[in-house]
Amino acid sequence: MSKPLIQLQEISKSFGENHVLKKLDLTINVGESVALIGGSGTGKSVALKIILGLYYPDSGNVLINGERSKPPFEGFLSQIGMLFQGGALFDSLPVWKNVAFKLLRDRKKYSVGEARKIAEEKLERVGLGSEVADLYPAELSGGMQKRAGLARAIADSPKILFFDEPTTGLDPIRTANISALIREIVDENSATALTVSHDMTCVKQIADKVHFLKGGYIAWSGTETEFQNISEGTIYHFVKGLPDTTEVES
Image (cartoon, rainbow, N blue to C red; front, side, top):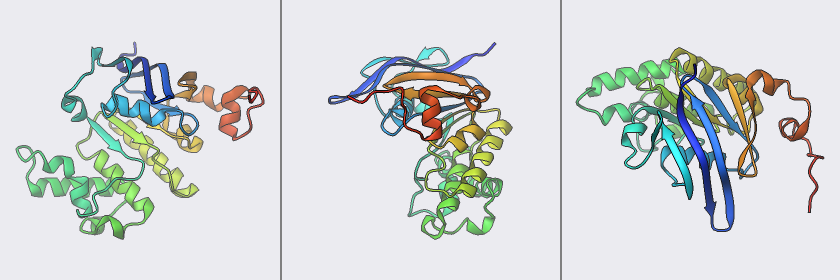
């Protein structure tokens, strides 16, 4: 039987007059790779930031392992790996220190030498050789920066992974490569994963389950197979990039 790891219960969030989330319910079970999709401005990243504690909901509850999540969030955040939309590498640090950033903060557990060794192993895992370890982020291409960001996300082999638009700005070949790599890493670590994306190719490769966010709530949910077989309705038009003729503009 599936065990819920992360639950959003009737989450609402507004920014001024903009009601982004409206009693959103979302459950992510242990070991699932879940994708949250929807148009720009539909609240995908807001939902992710609420899980991370970066935003507080106006109402509703966030449950982690069945317990209400509340500040301080360090205990939960220490269990996760995160790939940010823009890579979010530190420009002033060489690549290996970016990858090992979390490890270097725990000097009681890892020496500098051990942290560097792990960083180079993770760089190799994502297809970057040790020769990039001492380069700075500005010396890497966009695709290489994404891979370095992914290496940082998995540096301490977390069991919970979050990916925020992991293929933004990449060409189709790099998108396919990064998506396949993410799927492999999730499977290898038996990790629970949440991917926020509008890239349908990425979603089809990564996700076990897909949730379509529209109007501030989940408008459709299904398995990856069901998602692949959608042939009508609003989500079909969204996936195909077609105007939704079921909606009437006011």
